[in-house]
Amino acid sequence: MQSNWAGCWALFIKEVRRFYSVVVQTVFAPIVATLLYLLVFGHVLETKIETYASVSYSQFLIPGLVMMAILQNAFSNTSSSLIQSKMHGNLSFVLLSPISAFEFYVAFVLASVVRGVVVGGGILIIGVIGFDLTWQSPFWVLIFAILSAAMMGGLGVLAGIISDKYDHLSAFQNFVIMPLTFLSGVFYSIHALPEFWQQLSYFNPFFYMVDGFRYGFFEQSDVSVYLSLLVTIVFLIIVSSINLILLRKGVKIRQ
Amino acid sequence: MSNVPAVRFQHVKKQYGELSALKGISFDVEEGAFFGLLGPNGAGKSTLINAMSGLVIPTSGSIEIQGHDVIADYRQTRRLLGLVPQELIADPFFSIRELLDLQSGYFGLKGAKQRAWVGELLERLALSDKSDSNTGQLSGGMKRRVLIAMALVHRPRVLVLDEPTAGVDVDLRRTLWDFTKELHQQGHTIILTTHYLEEAEALCDKVAIMQGGEVKALDTTQSLLSKHSYRYLRVTLAQPAHTLTPPLEARLVEREPNGLVFKLEKNMSLSQLLAWLGEAKLEIEDISSRDASLEEVFLDLTAEGRSNAK
Image (tube, rainbow over the protein chains, first blue to last red):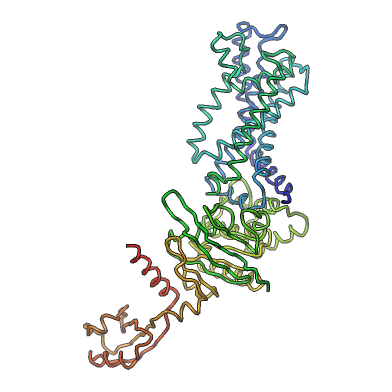
């Protein structure tokens, strides 16, 4: 069967334009909110938390906050777009077109990567300028930014598909995404945690995304960067596979 | 004209838990037809239409658009079919023109030719002045026009209109029907659901009447009307009739200020009615006869279904 990449591109552009049309809410607001975290936590905890050798707490914190913003915004982009389209009914415009489940998924996820990277990039620029942050290995920074955003964009697609109303999505966001992000080592190295919480952190996939991303800046991490890469890729594949099955079957969107 | 029907339904079933929305629908819509799909609320019309356009996946059975299966060959069938949905859908993030451009993009259509077609649609549906307006801020009638433009953006061969004139003012209704008739004359197959049965009678050359997820009747509009075993007689009286004899009372369907309307079996002679009117000592000024309207056929057929269901 022939492909429709032109249709996929049009859907990607539509999704990017959708968040760009409310750029204050979707880009500037999360940047400001994250910078407030940086100012408050960075200032209060600067001398209280030990991180890596020759790395200040604020420098340590910035990559974590950047990754947190990437994860949350990538998730928000796909999940809110899908639930709004379902509630307004305009998802049917796309469902009536010759775009395959795979092309649909790629378009939504790529747009979420763009939003995640734009928001993360905005915070990073301020971090680099204001806190003398340098990246030792841009390759790892980029690869973790893109793969993590894609994974979270995929998770957002999943939440958007299975949610019937905003309340369901809000529950997913507040009881799953938010705790996993806050407990992923954004604000600390897991080696500073008691043994039990340290062990528990290894079961949190977001921890590997934050840790791998941070490795790109300091070439130091809590676990091997290759393990982090493997976990991120495996989760991306699992989430994408579930989504493609649901989209092909039309679960909750073609019923 | 090819022998391949525009749409072919074969044993289409759709189950929602315990509810059978479609109970094995099978029929064809010929190429170039103006086809009416009628039925009371909950008959399964919208489910059938949504299954045809890919918005609903049937539980079993198959649907073909010009010989292409809507599941296996969905890219082809979605290019062949345009759907105007019943709900007044909008996208508050985009203007009318942006939406039409995006919809063109989903079908991989772009360039000067497509821009010209979008411009023509805007012009023809009287949307040009509002093309930069946000679709979330439009009136119901304007939203309906946008939905028609959206359905036509890829020049589909089969156009499906699900209750297109619901809640639309008289002027717009006329504009919509003129436009639809023009598309039909250009060779498009039109499938229409409507609650305005006089519209279906005036426009459709073939009609399916659905009830409870089944097709109760399927025939040409003329044949359905002629098969109806009753005709209607309007009797204008010089004096109001306060009491009627039992045979007249049994056939009375409507009292008017200066007359009565009777529903008679087609095989009953007019002289029999005149005899009954004479017995009742009614002074007749005028008599006119007409066949049943599609609405009356529809009501009779669906009434049978309702009583069978009891």
